[in-house]
Every structure is written in structure tokens, then in C-alpha cells.
Length: 413
Length: 170
Image (tube, rainbow over the protein chains, first blue to last red):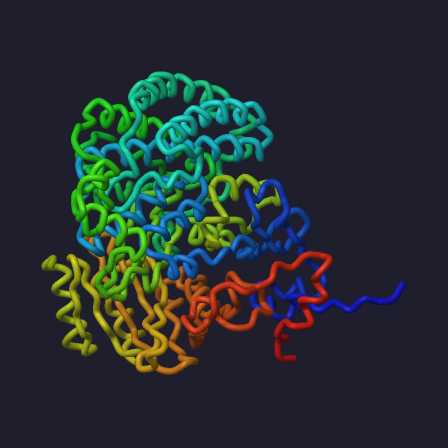
């Protein structure tokens, strides 16, 4: 066989010298590659581990395998068309991504959103939060060898995806929330389906809890594993369930209420331990709070329009186009040219299932965003991996990755 | 403007000759690069802005002066107020001091900005690319970087593509 020389440049140890201990260079400790095709890394996360036997001394995350250039792509599309890219970032929080993007556009161009649209947005965002947490509870328990929860969680998640499909025609990449409101009104069956879910879900949640919360094996694998202090969370910009599990009731739905969250009565669950188990408890409790919000929102769902009537930004309904010349012109201009936004910047945040998701949006006076940046919670959660995995077993690393609820599409963009 | 925010803004104006802009209730202060570190130390220690919410950059190509803005979004947990700092940078290969010692999470944000915009951060502890491969040429989020035209590499055409690919400097 002829020897084939590789054209690809490999990362060598010299470049990582500052990230590992001196013992790695003499071969006393072992450098082990984990991922990006490892089932417990929840996607394409690669970790370079420095191990002393079974103990993790250093953990160097290597991300970017799912980098798809979403920010660059969005710059070349009009504000309406760029929205479809946002579903694909954090694919478990697709509605939340649309939501925060639309809020940023609305703030930039100063667009109003009718009450009904705001309430439907809240219902869908909370359903998405539950569906994201369900996938998390299933997969992270699966990583710790609790097989059955996964099956149950997927069953309930399917109910949520059915509601999404009912509204938008898509199970996951919905793009249902649009700047100025919604794509169209919710169908007649929506009300019944959501109420059905609200009735069923709390009991199902008790089922999951009965399988995990007091399970000796689960406790053994989670209590005291991967703790992080409140101060470290704030220093590293970590928000969401991870911060709340270490004792700070920081929730953007309470702190900077948006889309009418101030009208709903719910509490922000916290724990103090900051370990994997505390994060589990916080997320389970969050699902119960989300159900409370959905219940209030569906009972008080106001009537009225689902889109802003500002024709300079929101296309007119189909029924108007046939009879009104202005409507036809607006429709044509909005779908060919798009709408212009001022050459200013805004930063808008929302609470995603993983923490604070922020959109930095800058216009240039034209119909396309000049710069859009997603501040994603997964990126910051991953950044503390070296800190919280130190001196844990390799087996516990799996539980820690699961408890941070990292979505690589979210961190790599 | 919130009176507590007004206090910070007045200080930045007086001490570091910051230029203040307000848009839809969001306050932005423009600072020159040489004031960056003292101003950030002051904002964190004296005014309690303890969290760096986001850090990113904007490219204004073909404009060259300033070509870039580095944008910092700061938040005070205690007072629940937000402040945005912008630092204009001239030229095609600018450098800026790192704020990693003040806000540790700037580490990855600055790696990403280096990766995507080619802005160097002086004194950074880990100046590698974050998202793109280590041997990547160019900085994708720059406005003069084309969108697309990267051929998808498979086993059967890998060698053919590598022939045309730019090589890293040895």
C-alpha cells in the first residue's frame, strides 16, 4: 500500500498546552477524546478529557461541528424570510426562537402585537418549554440508565407536537409566530387539545417523578455531582434552570416580563444545592408551572385579531387582496422588497428552556438585517464544563452534560 | 432613563468621554478602545454590573473608520438594569484588550469574535478559533467574505477539492 499523506491539519498537543496539566505532556495522565459521535453528548459535542485513571482533571470542549452559518445567512434575507433560519438554531425550542426574533423585529420597527396573538404565543412557548424538558428528562435519564422514562416522556411530547402540527402544519420547524402576530389564527380544535393536555399532563409528571425522584440508583448518580455556585453562574453568564438550581430566582418572564407574562400567576422554582439533582428538581417543577400558565392563558384567551393591522409591516389577509388595490400593493411590496428597519440596534431577551436567549439585531435602513447575533444559553452552559467536571468520574460526566441540557444547534449556530 | 442608569452613564461620560445614544429605551455608550479596561473595571466594581450578557461585533465594511464595532451587553443582577457598550475599531486587522479577567465568560465570546470577525484580543488566555476548523482561512461574518460557494466534501471528491483549497501558512 502506498502511504497516503493527509492534507488535514490536526490539532497538536502544543496548542493545548495551556489547557492541560504538565503531567499530560509526560504521559503520566491520559488524554482521551470523547465525541463528537458519542451518544451521551446529545449531538455533536467533542470533549478532550485529561484523565488520571477514572478521574477527570481537565475537560476541553470543542464545539462548532454543527456550525451552519445561521447569522451570516440571515444577513442576506429580508426580515420575514430570515425567520425560518431561527427554528433551526435550538431545535427543541423552535417556537421560543421565533418568539424572541419576532420581538426583536417588532421592537426595532416599533410594531404592535394584538392581545390574542400575545396569549397564543405564550401558550405555544410554554408548550415548547414542556416538550423541550420532556426530551431532556427522557434522554438525561437514559444516560443514567433509566430506560423507561424516555418512552413515557416521548409519548407526552407527541401530544405537544400534534398541537404544533395542528396550528402550523409542522411538528417542529413551525415558524408560526411572525413579526406583528401569528401566521394565522389557531384552529377550532386547538382549545380542546390544549385543555386535554393540561388535564392529563400533571398526572403523567407524577409518574415520571415516581420513577426518578426517590429512586436510589438515580440519587446515587445525581446528588452532589457537578455542583456550581451561584457566584460562578453569574460570573460565567449562566442563566435558566442551572442558575435557579443554585439558588437564584432569576427568570426573565418575571424580571423583564414580555408578551403579557406579568398577567399570569406562577412561581419560579429554585433549589440551593446546584448539583445535577437540583437541576432535575427545578426542571420538573418548571413543567408544573408552565402547565399553570397554559391553563390561565387558555381560559382567558381573548378574541380579536391575530396580526397587527399595520400594513407597512404585516401583509394584509387574503380576503382583502381581491378587493383593495392598496392591499394588493402592500402584499406585493412586503413579499418582494420586505420592510425597511431603522439603522439602530436592539437587544431583546426571552426565557428559553435553557436560560436567557437574546437577540442582538441591527438594521441599516434597508429590508435586511445588517447584523443579527443570537446570545444562546447552551454556549455559556458549555463554557463551564471544565469548571464543574473537575475531579469527577468519567461516568458522572455523562450525567453532567445531560443536566446542563446542552443543544449543539443552539451553541454552534 | 432609569436614574441609576443615568448615574453610570454620567460617570462614563465624564471620566471616559463616552458618547451616549438611546433607542427605544436601550442605552448605548460608545467608548474608545483605550478606555475599555478602566471603564469596565469601574462599571463592574462601582456600579455593580456583574453579568456580561452578550458580546459580539458588527462589521461596517466597506466603511473603514470605524470598520468594526465590538458590542458588550452588560447587566446588573442587583439593580435589574442593562447597559450596552460599543467600542469602534479602525482598520482591517484591529486588536482590542481582552476583558476576560473582568468577566470570565468573555473567553468564548472573544474566541468567537476572533473566529468570525478577525478581531484580535490582546492578553487572551486561549486565542484559538471557536466554531470554524483550526485551519480555516478568513473570517466568515465579515461583510467582504462571500456567502456560500463552499463545495461539500465527500470521500469521492475530497482530494479534488483539497487541490483548490487555501493552505494554512506553515
